[in-house]
Length: 251
Image (cartoon, rainbow, N blue to C red; front, side, top):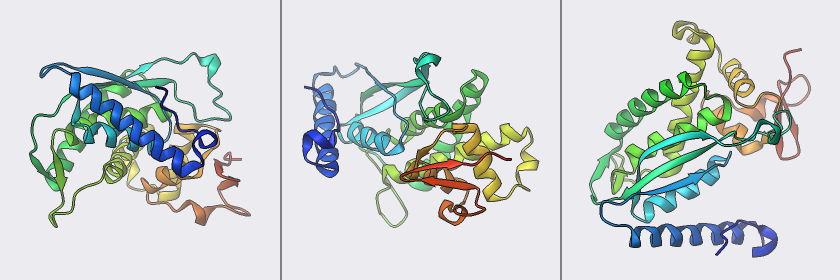
């Protein structure tokens, strides 16, 4: 069975998304069923949108699988990447998964600290290995889910469950701060940089001159406390091209 999200084949965007999510859950559920108690499965995924990542992570967790390790692996030839026009990924993320055997409930404040510590540890490793741009942001998702997925459920103090979308929002904020510290080569200098400049530096570093879907640019901006809709138009830093966003050059 080919599992694809194609609005033309499945009667529109919403039906196509629902088809993909349901089938991918079934696939992961079958993997869990046939997996031996101490067995592992390896999932290879490469996609530049956090929406797609949210779907895959939700499906993994709901199937009763969790990540025990993950690595970004360079898989694309430079000749296949058009860095000027598209925000292509040069790496695929390899996710090593096992059956979750515990239904322990995690307290979000504690889990957040664990996630942040784990992300920063792995980002330091990935930075030394030369991973940059969009690949660097995506490489942080695996380590975060390694922590998050150990629990049957993660709850806030109110008892409300934490969604994967909230997890990814926190990941973006941690990665944005880490990357800016490295770009500026001084953690102290970062404190004096305003939100819009942070967004500009991150966008340039992540996507170069590429145009990216509006929602991806919005999510990157949210990690720096910037509202991109307030910064486009005449004289604005950001240029909107239909459903895409591009940041103007410094000239």
